[in-house]
Length: 116
Image 1 (cartoon, one colour):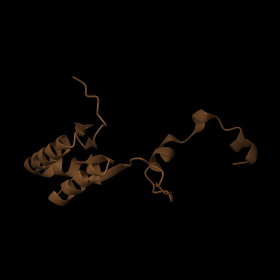
Image 2 (cartoon, rainbow, N blue to C red; image 1 turned 45 degrees about the vertical axis):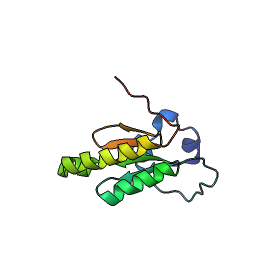
Image 3 (cartoon, rainbow, N blue to C red; image 1 turned 60 degrees about the horizontal axis):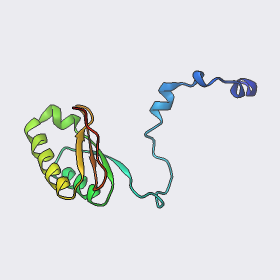
Image 4 (cartoon, rainbow, N blue to C red; image 1 turned 120 degrees about the horizontal axis):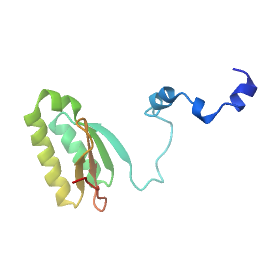
């Protein structure tokens, strides 16, 4: 593509698929100035549940992927979610389902507005 075409490229010409595919690539950044982080984690085992609880107690938000466990073992998922909910409630945090594949877990003083 010529230089002129690149400069004159309209905003609606952006390749959305390419943009979305590169969103989760790890960038070489430091997060020293951040008050809190949003951490994507998998929730499959007891160890994963403890990691979610630990991150929230440290003041971070967790976006947990529950898709695999939801397909394989709903009883185990319910058990892990109950444990996470009780620990998070004890520190005045919040938990909400975002979709059938993800939950959002927040630390103290961060509340999630839920639809009724």
